[in-house]
Image (cartoon, rainbow, N blue to C red; front, top):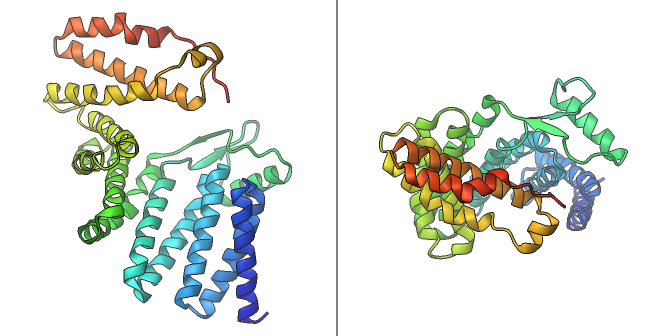
Length: 331
């Protein structure tokens, strides 16, 4: 095939992948985007023009997103690492247009490390490498039995891999946000939140406070622009700050931060009469669990601060209800 014929084939596969993804036909989307990435990658190695590199970058991002939706998080790492490399080449060709693409790809790569590191299939030995995981998944997809990993896990080492892309993207976003506040300020806040979360989850809480304080300040400004969008992210940041500063002698600050989070947690976990009677979604059940854990922690802080009446009021009221409730989880 000539270069023009190959590029036409790429466009055909890319369009097929888009239609399949929109229809939630993930197996077909994977096949189409995989072929689109193979073609555009081969073309980019022969002639690394800006339009060809951009096509390759889109293919890698689309394939990674398809696998993420499929529950195949471990398989997205290599694709997004490659996409980061392609985005860096795009920056060399046209920095004004490509820096946003590089920033978005670095954040997407950092998010990979929040997800599962490996698959666990009950009744078979642990997977030894990524190839064996991929072989297992493709076999399950072909048989129509893949429903995402039955169980998953992640090590501190895996979680900690997010640090490198985040430390690269944060100064880039700071610079971009100085000249164009939207959308880069919200991306900067997210990157700082992710960095703080990673430090908390890898036992480096002392390193988490600085990025989380900066994220908090940014989100407090952003909630004035869009309360519905940014309030949950501010709540999450404040929750992480509570975890990061548990060793802080300023007990009152820890209590205040947690009290500030509670209204949003209560809103997220509120139940309708229908939910009480017929059941809740898994997302709502998780929100109720987050509220319960936060109230437990607040009651413990009240006791530590000598606020025994406040602690008892939680246990006799809202927290007592949450500890004893039994909700049916429905799809």
